[in-house]
Length: 207
Image (cartoon, rainbow, N blue to C red; front, side, top):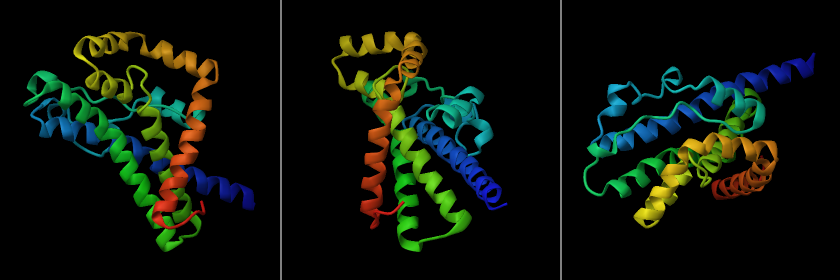
């Protein structure tokens, strides 16, 4: 049954790729916060790439089913940050998506350089896709996603505070985007375009 074997291979490749993408995303948030002086992530056991420390059941399920999702957010305390707190929040917020982009490029480079086949090719392909998807999704300027925190940190303080106040309504914004299909129309071209750019940068146009 070739179809069943191929389907099983894709599932066995997609799951670890998803876990790696989510875990490294949250680890990066926690690590940068820790480097900036916040002991909270370390105290809560989040400075690890162990998926069990980061998984949010609903967010993971939605990522598999709906094409977008999230891990359990790393808690931080900005009052521990050294120096400019607003700049530190921007750095912490960018850390997760940037880590995903690094992993996505490494996957693209491996696909281009080694031209693997079978399970390894499937694993690297899913790793590329999930990391690009997480980076793009989390950089959307919709509270409480990372992109909204980046925008809030770059805006004048009063306007930035308005963004932070919108966080409690974030799930409703995201639900509205999903129900209306807007999020798919936003994500699809961005994910395709960025994936193509990474593959080209790695030296191949094949995926």
